Image (cartoon, rainbow, N blue to C red):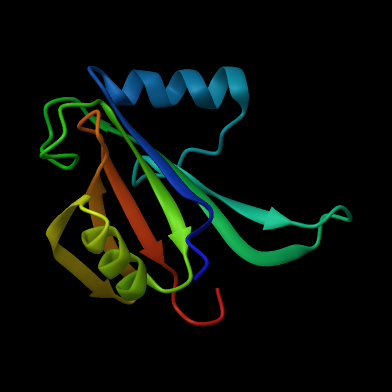
Length: 128
């Protein structure tokens, strides 16, 4: 079974997310959208879209979005078969959170690494 196939997103908290987003937009040219982040579309060597994306987003410090982790960040990894991977991780004794989410954006599950960081696993919708 293939496990992680790529990075789907990077999310982190900031004390002043509006100011930090503006800094990234001004100095690094990141096209920050009203929702607080951007989606980088994957392209091939010729610049043609390849059907994937990586989300980058800054949220407000103090949010419980990354709970039970206390880390100010969370990495989202793309996977091919979320259910099979979550089963395998449980069988291997990993701290897999019970909650999963299935939405128009795909299927999501979470595991906590040995350092206490919440890791998001994402199976994109078919065709993405």
